[in-house]
Amino acid sequence: MSSTLTPAQAWRALRDGNERFLHGAMEHPSQGLDRRSAVSSLQEPFAVVFGCSDSRVAAELVFDQGLGDLFVVRTAGHVVDTTVLGSIEYGVQVLGAPLVVVLGHDSCGAVGAAVEALRTGVMPTGFVRAVVDRVIPSVVSLTRPPAEGWAGGGSLTPTAAELGQEHVGVTVRMLQSYSAYLREGVEAGRVAVVGAEYALAEGRVRVVEVAGSVED
Ligand SMILES: [Zn+2]
Image (cartoon, rainbow, N blue to C red; front, side):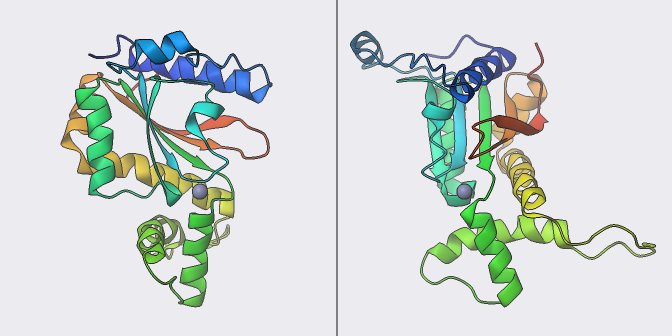
């Protein structure tokens, strides 16, 4: 089975759902007994959402979707490992979803922890360190020293908002560099990857970076 939507149509459905959520006009689609029964034997989600595990960034809620609509992968700070890549590829390749959304958010604790670890030199203990380790490259990429010959001006200290958005962009690029299947899908126009940031207080999802096309 596979979704019959184009990447642009899938993104429009998510954008419309977020618009409803934003204004408190949710339709709570695909949540009735009939839907539960209909999708019990097969699923054809129209999008993969790879987001932060943050309890306030629940994919089906912020996009006003229901059962069988989204194939959701979440890790703290939407950090990538091989099982994440495999899960995303499964959603696209096997289930036929035409769209992957990387969903970061403002005030992300994982990004904050990476900044703190770089500032103090103290790493978290246990496996939390594995999360922070995977966010640090995004933070470093934005705070690297200026190129040779740089004549000054501007600030070299990125804001928390800039760091969060950079981490979303880095994640979008990382998915394509690791997954040949995704990269080829984007190049062929079968798949699009949208990097987006959710605003906790406002409820709006804003686009940070797009690979492929989601234009109608
Ligand atoms: Zn987060």
